[in-house]
Length: 204
Image (cartoon, rainbow, N blue to C red; front, side):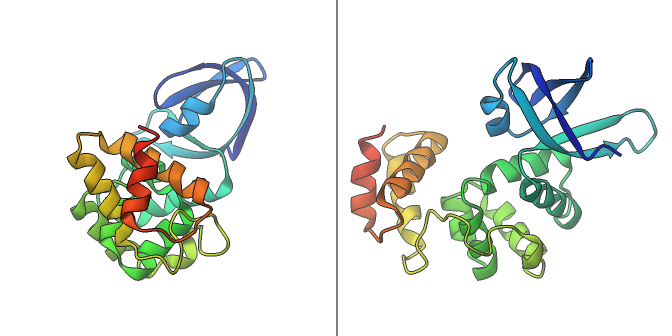
């Protein structure tokens, strides 16, 4: 079984890269963030999860930048009902915005944070909490992982700011990106929804 691949990026798509290793090109499915960061002709190391078809045939490779991403992907696939590899990649893309906050939201069973900050639907957020509430030790981000939300900051603040941006006509993805940028700039200092919204609007 393939554990890692280190090679040169031949090409990339929205959710895949072709990695040349020893003269062989391997097609590897990745998150959108990993694909966007993969520069053609540049070296890349991926941690690999191999999936085999139920009825035979070849394997499908899924790649991750860190062992923690690979472990979270496996946790999504194994413990959340109805979650295949492609859906697990989508979940990973969202949770990867802040593994510390994702871990905390599951621990606190806070579906509003999973929906408002990470972009999961309400139904999916509830399914994630139910499936992973007893699997917290398998989730990265429980220690000193960077967080977008301070421990002493009301979780609803970012949700309020996100809702306000969406009401102003901004797409959820660009609104969440602006909010993430604001939290990085403020260094995790507590702030009101109004302050966060004001700073986010400067980035849109």
